Image 1 (tube, rainbow, N blue to C red):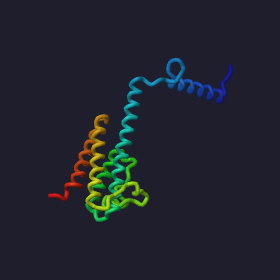
Image 2: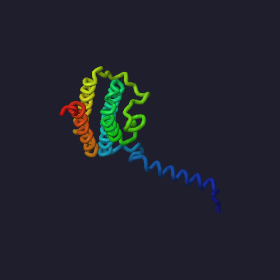
Image 3: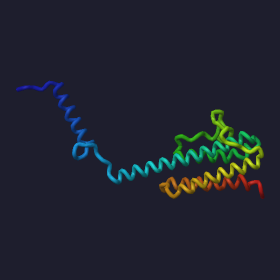
Image 4: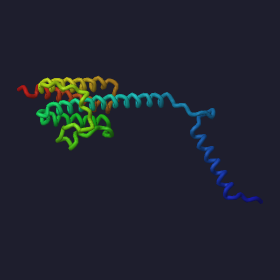
Length: 182
């Protein structure tokens, strides 16, 4: 009677496990398993949602850059713009699912000042504060419009978030242009 050594037994067990794993990952015919139509559709939907989220977050970050440029160019507007900028920063965070959004400001929502690492040279700010507010309101409105347009292709949960952010943007645009009249 022959006895198997421990090494031979381990080798046989490892070979069996490898064969079992190979069977799990390969489809019929020995080749790699092809995704089903439903899996491909789910992958396309996930990719489309990821692209939509990137566009929404980018639009929000661009708007934050505009807020920062106006505050940098017109420090007298900082107190008026601070709550709106903080809200826009919260929108970016929500749209990005909290992972990659910039902070509301270097010392929290109370300080809307731009951080030194941000480049504000890309945004032209009119010398007149009223014109700067008008331009900022137009940018806020355009961002809100882009969020509204994205509703058509957004999955339901993200569409609700976009609708809320777009409505807030419309209110911000109103406050920037009509808020002092009254």
